[in-house]
Image (cartoon, rainbow, N blue to C red):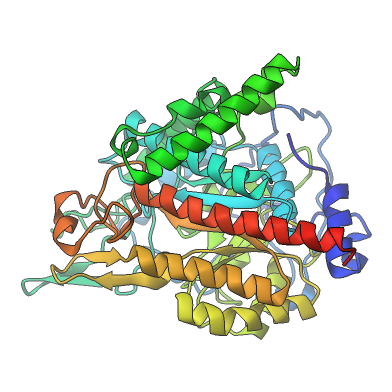
Length: 525
């Protein structure tokens, strides 16, 4: 299932001309055993099902001296913590966290390692990351149909991107844990009434009244249960035949079927179907697992640190700590302070990590942050998710790429064209224009072409539902349409038709890039 570290190291050598930092064995993150005096945390050993072991591996301290010495499971508590809720009943919170500590892990460490290896390939231009899902999951909209439809759109987009780029597509959902959201304003005011802001269903409610806005620890239990149930269904879809390539013609959503994007998708699906028929006629099996199943991972923003700590487990296979709430976690734009609690927590877990980066990011600060989170320069460990708008992308991104390259750091560059393009519609609703999203994606590819670096992926807020939250696209959604099917609990999402349209445009860029690379290779350049 997973690519080897050896192949990632070889690719790193060909890209950077040196493998100095990769030439010795390492774990890639800072680790120390749990503090015995920490808050009654009982380590639970999380072992990948395919990697059982009876002998625990000694945990090594690889902490970089520049970040304050030893890492402990709760050392983040000694740092300044931003965007964490204030619970009125500390004893109730403590009780809930102890309950979650005793729960099984939601994901397994070996799965996270496999994702890291694949992201290492994306860093070298040999794979492409497709990361998408809800802005913020909600308790109200939790249903098997909604999960299936978002998964189905991601399958479609993955097929389109893989066909155009002729490379593996790494499918990662903003699902099974993406509840909490940092807010720019801690308070919200309506009709002269001022209340704490809604911060996600795992913290408080979106109903505008005082009781609903009080942080409730019991919501963490419900969030855990919903995340586990979501991942359980995703595993069934990914491995139970639903994701089989032979079903590619059946993945279209009903409302998108008779659209320009639906027609383009069906044309591509029929071409794939013919190729599968040719393989079968030639005696090549189409029953291989690679054709009947798909790899799918989950991710969310690492924001609510008490919850994340409660789900962190010591992996007996590697001797490293993994946050078993998701395969991949990212550090948000508002919580990436070098001396902050979120960076402190993330530097000690072995999951692949994302860093959200806006036009405010200083190149030297980015280099320092990467050094803290990935002192051993392990491929696939760090994904830089750029969110800054098209104009800023063209001006700011080149400086970030050059700084990271000068430092010899290996990262996967990904475009988030959503967060830098949020506007307020005349009706008062937040929205995003499809043309602005597309412009930022094009700027991202243009900059990487100019800099000779690899555009490693796309990060989208999207849904499989037929919503009207982002304006534009070939099936034009107008300002007047917004209120008809505006269901988001936080930020506007692309609907399935808009997401698929974007994937075709990205696939064409990948195809042109592939052809250009092949032409250079044929010329011996």
